[in-house]
Image (cartoon, rainbow, N blue to C red; front, side, top):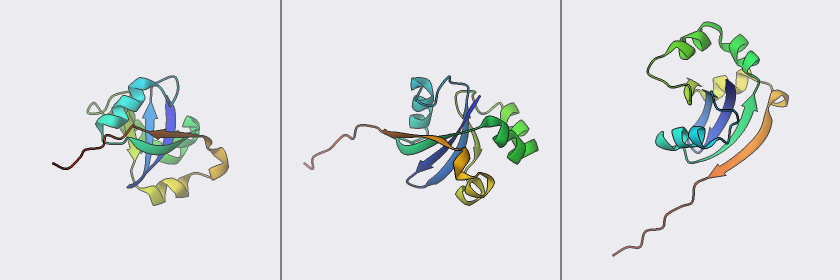
Length: 105
């Protein structure tokens, strides 16, 4: 699993994916399906996520409502930033879906 700190317009998310890399099309599609289409993403070492989140990490991994392509660990930006030192992050990956412009009738 890879772990990602995703910074969006509405806050930060800590997510896990079984994808080989964080810019894998399946992972990006799973984010898009959640309405996350513009973000800055950093990789976080998974072992640190396991250590910081402990039992919650295990519960997240066993959650049958989530898929291995996208497992949300935390959506509390303040807690996420408290749990990780910035120097452990690698990246960034900038992602923005092409915008569709609609004209008024």
